[in-house]
Image (cartoon, rainbow, N blue to C red; front, side, top):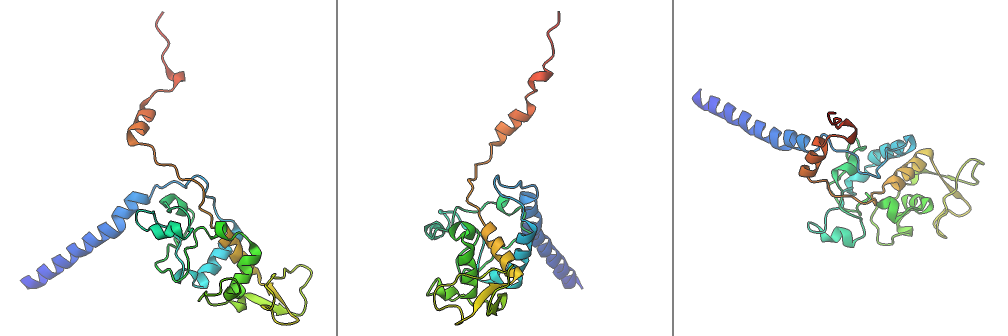
Length: 216
């Protein structure tokens, strides 16, 4: 009986320590993070595209967290952009940080590849744009037609990629996905936080209009 009590107490203590380290302390650190100046909420189309990004499992092969040069110098050398900060993810629910890099980091893909034609074509056939790519193609995101309707777009593909005599038309969810990818731009500068001493001095200083008038 005594051993069972010790085992239970040890398990509860271990669980409490794990919850404190993995849940409570991170929450205290980031629960009041403000948006980085320059980051914008996603539009409704971009949110639909983000849902498609998740549904197609893009985060299983792509991260969205370039790291600092001191920690991972290769990230900046690859042109993936500056290191991310918590404020970059304020509008991301859920966060799509990713843990695998089978493909490149995508937090700044909207800067590196802003072209809609490139993004659409790359989804249709990645190896037409990056020969050594191992990314799967997503033909089900497109319709193959003899002729596009008046209100439809046609993907401008490299010669020989589209089926002979046919046109490739992106589906609405594909256009939304590309809008989301184009919105992944974290190229605005990140200013260092103000020293706490300066913040305290600023908040304690009385506004000029509140200065009492001298006694007559």
